[in-house]
Length: 417
Image 1 (cartoon, rainbow, N blue to C red):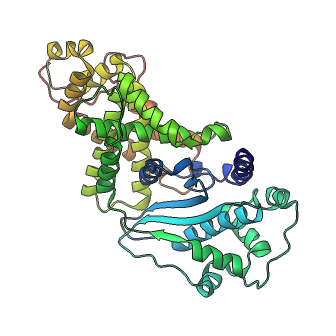
Image 2 (image 1 turned 60 degrees about the horizontal axis):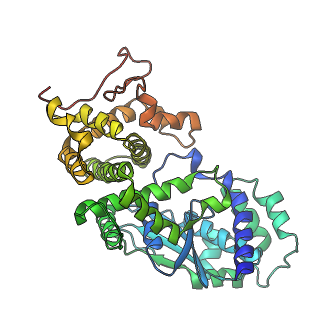
Image 3 (image 1 turned 90 degrees about the horizontal axis):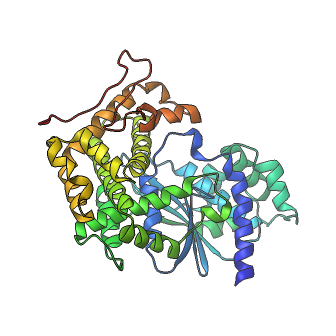
């Protein structure tokens, strides 16, 4: 079993060489739907491990079967089916060429009002692959070297085309189509998020410090998203990119039962998601580029709040900024129990959301030049809340907008102070 795992890992790592430089780093996007699908897979007891944003959006490894999943959220119906099918078949073909032995199931996990139907081989060859090879081509022993030299350096579409031209054949395409699953019964993201949170809340967490189910499930969802986000770091080793199911459950239990800062930050992450949902519901005319920018800001905000609220001082700093309560009523926060702290943060639910909405609106308005196809890492930094925050001010959240006549500012609720 150990040797089989070692061979599988080696193939995954070789394939990731071709994806590392073609990752989504040049595109502004958020990953929430993908995160929720990944969490759903980790909640299944037969899942051994997953990878996110690695070979595909999600790679799921079970005992005898590997699933390569494209997770796509298209609430307006514009499913890019050709692009998706080509990407899925490319990864399926590469696994075949590299001699991967386990059963492979390609999956399109999609939310869209438009129904996606499976393809016939004739339509796939005509519209997507443009290849008609009856017999299996001879695959050289050095196929990994060939991919590394002639395929991986190309951009995504060129790499797919090169690989198809050389090694796609009819039976392999038919096997892919027979294995392909299109799962389209997902709910809209608000309801899907609630379902995932409910399933997380059912996990038995020994020694949990949160006694209320609603609070607990939202904190667990925030922790689960945090865990997934730690795996998006390209600087991690291949082994570190793995999400082992047992490690995932241990992470939830450890932080839910012992780490107060993680719990508060995780709860605030659920508030961030609900704030984003409110904006999406009201602003139905946003372009795809604007939606992607907002989703990127959302994910960056979750990371910022997780870091800020990892300490009691950071939690107090946030509450002191947004609260409409008197200073005296806030001063007792730091000595409260975790349940009481969660309760006080919950009392500030509406003003925290209002703070975020104003902050996000300003960030989006001053970064309209980033609504383009390719965005550099330096430009992407402008979509992080930390870029605008004066770290020298530790009492409240002081905001600085570059090239603005205002040296510093704070977004405050009306209050008694």
